[in-house]
Length: 304
Image (tube, rainbow, N blue to C red; front, side, top):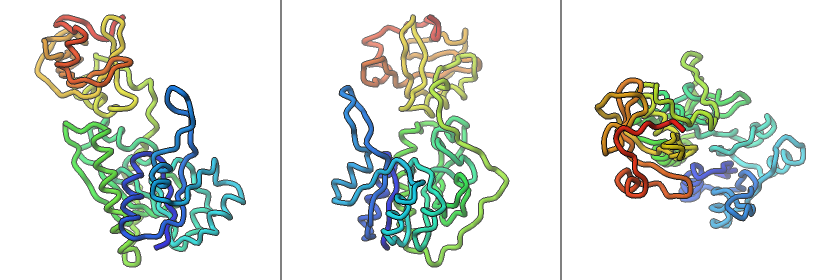
């Protein structure tokens, strides 16, 4: 098929590769414009931009698709279908209508649960037992379109947003190729009205750990915000990102380190901190971290 691909972050790259490998003709790749990044604040192309350029594909990065000129340029591609995955711009109706078979979105949740911007983070933080990927026929509403295909995966106690991100990206790449192969025979299923939830964008204010909360919630907060923005606490005034944890036995004053393995008492239960990071340092496992910064039993986290 003749495909317009629309995506921006690393999550979208395996999907682009899968479409190319499956032999589909990529008419053009749309992504967000390069933005300043790194210490030099030089414009850096997005992961999709970089990958598309390496593949020799035409790349477009309009600031908006609302204008008549941008919409005419999109329509002139005469695509059979547009594949949209974490693109980052709202598609006007004229764009949605331009491809002969419409626009298909790869969404990283089991719709209608977790429509919106941060479905992977929210699924972990809410304690969902599973999540997945949906191939959805796009319409004007926010992730409201009928679903063509879906696939589920369990969320394990070892899953971080980073790990789940990679798994769902690979699932989405496989599922969209299947969807295009079967497009003529698939029946779109309208989303039920029951069970709708919204995955609002992660606010950095959510990252500070409140040790009065139950251990289960804190563990999910740490894993759900890993690697970005990273849940954090303080130890004697030093901010520390917490990137991996597990539930542990123990009790004590809230926020107190209970042993040499960095088990921390919570409002109910305890968590063991497994991966930590100080500003300007790489993430480290607990044993390595303790060689550079002492966190003795009895120390109160979250103060100072």
